Amino acid sequence: MNPILLLHGFTGSSRSWDEVVSRLPADQPIFRPHLLGHGEAGDAARCFLALPGGFEGEVGRIAGWLRSRTAEPVHLVGYSLGARVALGLALRFPGQVGRLTLIGVHPGLAEAGQGGPPGAREERRALEERWIRMLREEGTDAFVQMFERLPLFASQRHLPPALLSRQRALRRGQDALGLALSLDQLGLSRMPCFARELPALRIPLTLVVGGGDERFLRMATQMKKEVEGARLEVVAQAGHNVVLEQPAEIADILRGRA
Image (tube, rainbow, N blue to C red; front, side, top):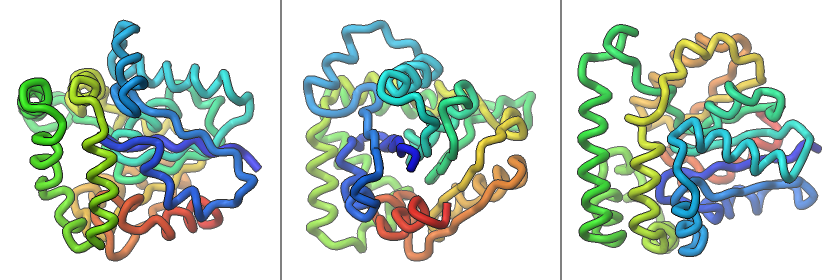
C-alpha cells in the first residue's frame, strides 16, 4: 500500500484532513506536512529562518521533505493551494509520485500572449497585496472574517455550526505574518502557469471538484482534456472545499475510485 501525501489549502493545516484520514485504512502510511507559512506558531515562525524561494522553491522543499521520509512513489493529494503545489511537484519530480489527485485545482494564470486575459496576473497580484497588508496590519482574525465571506465559500454557510466553528478555529490559529508570507510567495499571481505542461503528465490523474464550484469545474473539465487518461469526479452538494463539505466522498475516491 503506497503512502499518501496530503497537502492542505490556504489558511488550512494538517488537521484539515482529519475527517478524511479517519475514513482511510488504519495501516495506510499518511504524510501531512504544513505548507509555507502555515501550521502551529512555531512551524510558521521557522519559515522565516530560510530565504523563501517562491512557488517553485516550495515545490522543491516539499519534494525534499517527502524524500527524507520515503523512497516509495506516493499518492499525492492536494486541495486548492495544496493542489497547485501538488501539480507542480508532479511535473517537476514525477518519480516521487505514483498517483495524483487534485481537488479544486487552478493550473495557473496564463499570460495574455498564451491565451489569458490581459492584466489578469497583475489584477490578482494587486488583490493578494491588499490581503497581505490586511494580515500585517489587522491580524488573522480580521482577515479570516473577510476571507470566509468570499463567494468561493458561499456553499459552506449551510454546514453545521460546529463544523464551521472548528474550521474557523484552525484558521484563527494561524500566524498572520506566516499567512502573509504564504500569499507573497505562493499566491496564484506567483504561481507559474502549468497549463501548457499538462499533456506531458504521465501520472494517473484524478480531478475532483464540487458540483457547485462552477469556475473550477470548467477548469477541471478543460484539464481532463489535456491529460491522457485523466478522470473527473464531480461531488454533488459541495462547493470549492470538498474536503470540508464531503470528507466521506473524498475518502471514498482516495480509497477505491481514484
